Image (cartoon, rainbow, N blue to C red; front, side, top):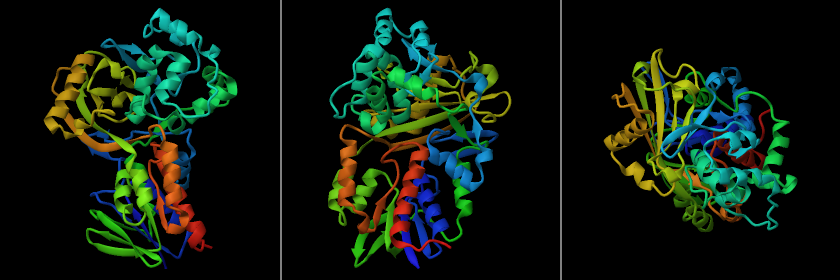
Amino acid sequence: MYEVVIVGGGIAGLAAALRIERAAADARVTVLEAGSRLGGKIVTAREQGYIVEGGPDSFLTSKPRGLGLCRELGIESRLIGTNEAKRRTFVMRAGRLHPMPEGLSGLVPARLEPLLASDIFSPEGKVRLRHEPDVPPRESDGDETLGSFMRRRFGAEAYERLIEPLMAGIYAGNGDELSLNATFPQLRALERAHGSVIRGIQAADARRAAGSPFVSFPIGMSELVEAITARFRRVRTLLRAEVRSIRRRGADVEVTHADGAVRAQSVILATPAFESARLLEHVAPDAAAALAEISYASTATVSLAYSAVVLPRPLDGFGYVIPRAEGHAALACTWTSSKFPSRAPAGSALLRVFLGRAGRDEITAADDEELLALARRELCDTLGIATKPLLTWLDRWPRGMPQYTLGHLERLQRIESALPETSGIHLAGALRGVGIPDCIASGESAGDAILQRNIRPTS
């Protein structure tokens, strides 16, 4: 029997475990999870008719391994898209909500006309936007920050008022520190291939499939975790099994955890970079040092339920994003009961406020009452909701979002060089992408590396 230990029971670790179990009859997989549940940042509360996400509420259909895994699990038909009848978002400008201009593709515009008609931008900002197709591509092949690229292509106003808050909704990061090549390399590729991001986006959109770009499940994202674990037959999962150390024992790797120790021929670390760095300190110090350089942002989410009759305005969209320049403690608010069906009982509304961003790590150190007060103040100031909520839910994510700062791809190369496949130790998780499909793909890739090198396939 070939022993594999997976440290971390988030979506990456679970995807790795499923991949190995399905492909190899002679492998025995143990998943060690430090917490009290599986799923990592995928956490769904189901209470009094509300479906509340503490982490991601959906995943992108454009990245293949989200839909692919659902198809393999037989749950693709369970997927639901966003509510097309309310498919619009708002952006804050000078304390007021303005409709997000149509014609955006991800972070950037595919069409100029809706942006030029928007009151988000000044006349000078619109002139600068209009000239994006005329901006020559940068000749240097070196990396640059996301903020630098966006200002160069679209101007400072478009970046600060529109693109930055959309980016922060993904990474909770500072665009003047994030690496373009590690976050949105496709935008640089469009610039080089078409001489203009807008021209490149238009060409790509002509080939893009229709349908909702984001999907979820009727009873929340935890349905994906439950579907994976229901397929386990030989995978052993141990909760509250915090791993204390990893050591070499001849050809094996010994993993010591809260309840004992287990030896394995292969180990997958599906943990945050700082935790992987701690565990690799003695067995792969160079890899550990590079992993420790990856910084993280801390965030928290507060979900609040209200009777619909107390809302001063209709929730006629998916929510709003807040530019850093507005100076709010929150970076966004999702109108959950409008975005997806059946997230709240009839006559009720469910909203989720996102607190914190890069440079505001103190947010998760605040006590529950303070975080709740910040969320309620945001809803009062922006939406006029002064009524006490019927129910609240709070989820903290200290050091929860990796920041792919300049040099991130080079760091990954150093890690891979210091941790070759022959070491028997593999990494998975949000190192090359923060979305659910990215994490699934990373777990499966780590599983495949073990299968190809060491394990006889199931006949």
